[in-house]
Amino acid sequence: MGLRNGASVMAGFGLLIAPVQVAAQVTVSGSVLVSQVEHRVSAGRGVEQTSGTIFGGAGTMRLASRFEITVQGQSGTLNADSAFADDREEAEGEVRVAVLAVPWLALEGGLSARSFATTLARQRWTALHLGAEARLAFVGGAFEGRIRGELLPSVSVTGLQAPNRAVAAAAGFEWRSGALTAGLQYALERYDFPLVETVKRHEQLSLLTVSLGLRLGSRD
Amino acid sequence: MRRVLVAFVLLAAVAAPLSAQSNTAEMLQRARLLYEDLEVERALVILRQIVSPASPFEVSREQRVEAYKYLGAALALQQGQAKRDSAVLYFRAAIERDPFTDLDPRSFSPAQLEAFSEARGRTFAVALRPVPADTFDPRTEQITFRGLSSHLASLRMEVRLGGAARRILHEGDNEGLRETSWDGLLDDGTLAPEGRYELAVIGRSRLIALTDTASLYFEVSHDHAPLEDTLAALGPQDLLPEQHPASAAAADLLKGIGVAATALLIQTTLTSGDLGRGGGSLSGAVAGAGVVAGVAAFFVRQQHRDIPANIAENARRRAEHDWSNAAIRQRNDDILRETKLIVTPAAGARQ
Image (cartoon, rainbow over all chains, first blue to last red; front, top):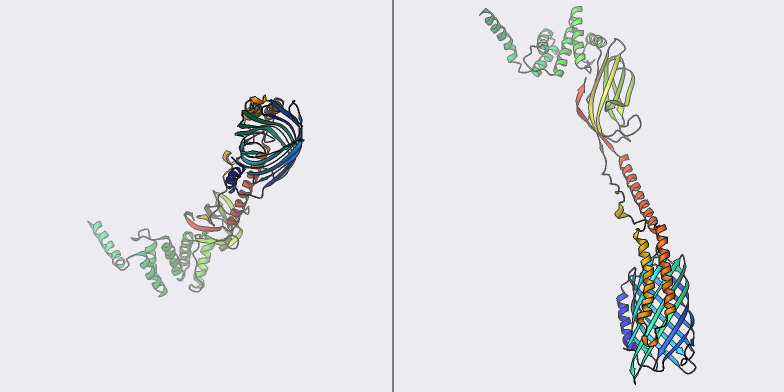
């Protein structure tokens, strides 16, 4: 599935959410993100592992208690943890749109772009995300547990065939107190590429993200 | 046999004049005409027949009073103290039966008026005119009641409800007719509620040692635009729960543990075996935080079950409900302030 097909799916998703009436209720939040990243690749030479801390930020605008747009970006250096790995600079960005079908379930779609740059080359990734996130409020809404599952039906990677299986999942918490928000999330992305000349490539990105932010506007 | 013959003759003698006078009204009319033609003796015969207990016709109270009045007037025209005394007696009989009885000075002679006045002085009675049917606005109008004492007396007129005096209309000396007005209010200034009222007059003669009372009844009803119903009290279905159920603490614990378990599940099942899994410490951090959050939530929920947002919302709904009812009551009060009283005569009188 190519990026063009992915764009069509996104357009359909947009039509799905179009009837949502946007009211004057607007909430804007911004967060600082710090992520511990572990990147693993298997491409016939054993497992190449890099890890490191990346930094960034995210902004979310919530309309009418049902419609959310999130933009986030992070970058940092991943250091080689194995013999065949190289240090690399990672930069990634994502735009995510969510519609809360019910207060505890958001249907999500998004586009992400990521690059890994070593001294020899730069690899660019783009992916379409479609999924759902359960939001489990507890302690009277001060805490919210979040569990997300996504399919990535359209992934393109420079120099590689598109993976024939790409999934992502996450679990974490968000805490709110007045305008202050904080979060902790574990996320995993897994990509299984098709067999090419007896080599089957696998890539996996694990992230533990800590966020700290402010939330402004009407409260839901 | 002789007795039967006498009775027959007497009946025949009486039947002759009665045949031309079919009822009391006609007899009374004929007596008045005779009186006006100064055929006093003939008028007296007819008038005595009317007031006689042996009258073959039914005689109403008014007709009897009229007959006594003309008997008194006819006898007052005749010479002699005995006639005058009889005139006074007949006038008294008329006044006792209807204290409102009076002689028109334009139609009766001074001698008649003097005899009538003496009769009044020697007779004591109080009376009330029937209450007229009326609708009036208590803010601007009044209803008039008419009472009377036959001569100078200490008189008290009052409106009673449930046997108790609720509004005194007149209290003081009175002689003759007394008109008094009622504004529809009770002594405490409130509007007379709907019900059956008694208008009573109590008189104590200043001339002779006699007391008399009279009363009659009337109904009071209210006339106003329809009133609005106030809102029913808020029930459980109208309010939000103000406390979390006891099971909420356990549910929060499960949520925390659920997120923790999911983090571990992602790490153990979604990661690739070809890549050696990995990320265990990252997912473990979230799993640990989930357990801590769940346990903390469990204890917090057990100790703080109130839901402040719902409590505030319920307070707002109660205030809105109370405000709406206050507005309805205000509108109803405005309507009630424009209430008109409908007064209708009711059965039952004591004269």
